Length: 218
Image (spheres, one colour):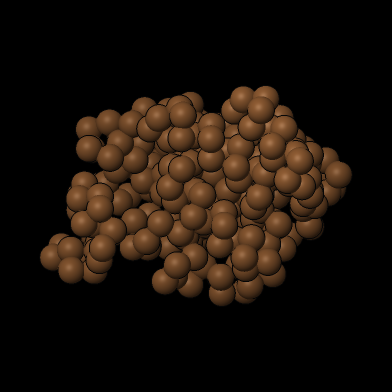
């Protein structure tokens, strides 16, 4: 973003900061093979972000922090795809039972870690995610995965609207194009979430001390 854009946002009053609580969950949005394998039309090389996410997940597992995965999955008929499939026909590759809806195995998902299947962009829309977070008594949502300009952004906005301080881990989110990625990180950090570095998040997870996690430069 240009300095002019930054100044404009600053003058508009986008200055608030969010504070993490003591009971976080990690939300892994759509790091399914359909997005992380270039053999799928929707996919791109997200190796670095997958590996960084695995680092965070392993630390969260050590601390017993809830981890929830999402994946887009449609019935074989695609009748449940709605208008979104008209706009993005390649989403039709993501069918129930297909390899493309499976969580990328490099993340090491465990049997007890919930996978929520969705048909829209937001992890919250039409799913039981909100009730799952409530059952876990979560007070903070840490968001990773893909894509920054699509399902990450939609999920972050809904997370905030559900009342959760929401933190996006810069090194752990990916998009197929750099421009939309950076623009959406900047805008989310300004309006809906804190964009933070992996090091800060790991320190927070290790100590569960709220001041350990501060906003990263965007």
